[in-house]
Image 1: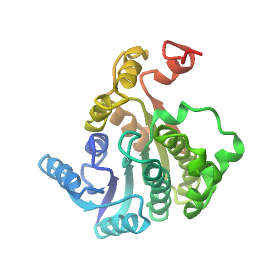
Image 2: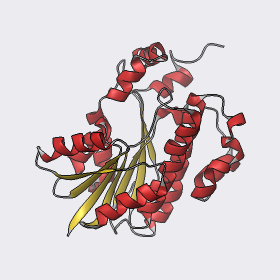
Image 3: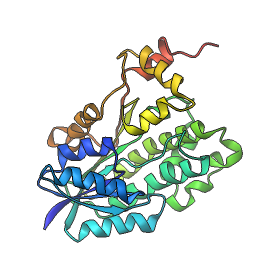
Image 4: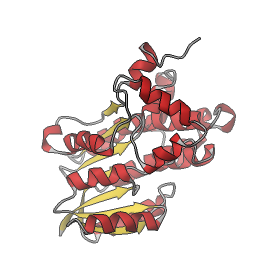
Length: 276
């Protein structure tokens, strides 16, 4: 039996991470569009990895459990790469909350029930969670600890309290950060670790869609004026994931690492600071 990597979200970021941590392991890649999963599996298999694609909708607990069961056919779950999600330009408020907020919480919860001793997970969230005012301890705790099936009933997530798709996305990413902390405690009881990475603008097909979308100028301005002066690459993100998922990161759990070329710093204290 092999150590198994579950990889949700068949995109460039997941691919870069899987190439770093997946050699010698069985990888199951799940995506809502099975064609995407098949494409990634073909790329990886042609490079010497062992990858099986499966259709996975992370907004569905049944679909997540199906992904886990597929992995368990080959051995114990050793790693989770949680890289599935939708962006503010791609989806409606309800979809963003169902996929990015609820779906992520369920994925971390269900994998946490079966992750092997010494296992590791990384969730890819976003700098967006850092761009909104603090919500306060009470709301943070609700986002962190509310039973997953009750999350979408929280008052703070009701339609009348969500301004637009960007606000929904920010709320989802703030919830991700808190959920990583909460689930890291649960994973720790099994001798496993869980962390998050909150990237800024990383060039992927999804990001290119955003550059060419209604908020394109906003994004281009963001990476021009951030300290790095450019967007990032999936491989740079994979550098951080490799640290977090490897032995060098053995003392790191429950953290979300902001890697955005300094954009958030600039948003608060530099050239990107909103003008009153």
